[in-house]
Each structure stands twice: as structure tokens, then as C-alpha cells.
Image (tube, rainbow, N blue to C red):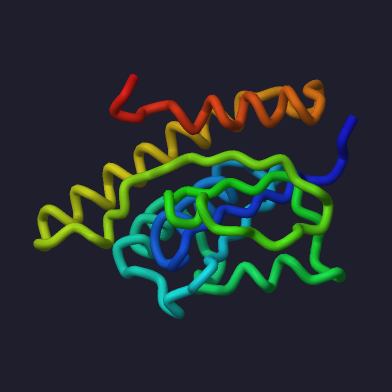
Length: 167
């Protein structure tokens, strides 16, 4: 039986919205079973206010910051068990070698930051939040401790297809 939390790294190019929202959702909903982080290949250096507002709405109290994925690729970094890209750009980039040799998956989520207009942007953030929450709920239901590496990766990748327009 595993006694340590699973370390999960959510990646997006700018690390300002989707990956930050996923980090906060999993840290709150995972109730200690998971320790989630987020990072970006080209971090914007700031967290989008709507992403922070949504994270705070579920009681996430940790500081939110936009950071480089390089922080998690160092030899002395905590080993990462799972890496999930949440934007298509990050999924297509060459990632560093992660300590711990994690399983990987892509959970593409439309970019709410790209949406124009206050009301439309707020709806886009809420939609991205709900898509991430649905997928994280599915992750939480997985019996990861009973799955081998290949099965874990297959299940995580299947979750990435949940809620996509081609369903």
C-alpha cells in the first residue's frame, strides 16, 4: 500500500490559468492523496485573476505563482509520478527529463485567456474549470495503487478525452 501522495505536475505554456486551476483543484479534492504542482515552458510570470478567484472559491489557500517547468526537472527535485499537459502547445513541446520517470497524459482544455470580452471570458474560465474538475474527479476514482505503469498511462490518457467536442 502506498503511503506517500502521488506527485502530479500540470503543464501549460504560460502557467497562468489552466495548469494553475488544475493544481488547485487536485490539491483540494485529492485530500492529501495527491500533491499537485503546475508549471509552464514559457511562464507568463503572473496568475490570471479569474483562475485565482476560482481556486480561492474552493478553499485553496496556498500561494499561486506562474513558474518554469525547469524547477521540476532538477536532479534534486521531488520525483514526479504523473505529468499532464493541459494545453496543446505544451503537449507538442519537447519536455525535460523528469525525475521519477512519470507517466504522461494530455488533457487538452481550451484557453480561457484567449477569449475576448468580460462576460465571455468569465464563461470560458468557468467552462475550463468544470472540464478540469470533471477530469480530476475521474483521476481521483482511479485505483492507481492497483494499476501498473502501462495501465495507469492508458487510463490517464483516456480521461483526457472526457468532455472533448468529438465525444
